[in-house]
Image (cartoon, rainbow, N blue to C red; front, side):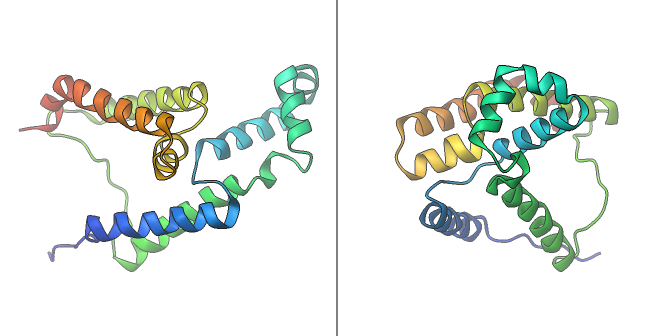
Length: 172
């Protein structure tokens, strides 16, 4: 079986920086993904429980700020583009397939529960912090925002601190 090469990480980082620069130039804002998830959740609540959405201040304010509806946000289209682009990249590089990445000491259930729990906590944190890693950290650092720098330091610092507890699941 031939080895499948990845893109050079320095080139990938440089290209991501160019995309971020273009996004700031074209839209006046940086990249972000948590806003798209918020839009999907709000649209779901509006569809499933319209009375609740109509009687809740948060949904009323959001509707006033987004008169065309939450799914018209450019962030929704950005995330759809990321998903489609990732799929096309996988097809082009012959990497499309189902695989659960985990260490030798982790079970499938542990990995799935850990991923869902981590994703939920990160999603909650992105709402409390008013942005995800793309919006707060990456885009924030690109414009030399003190908050962006603190966010990135916090993300990496916490990852390094927690790695001590989880590394035994990933190492042989």
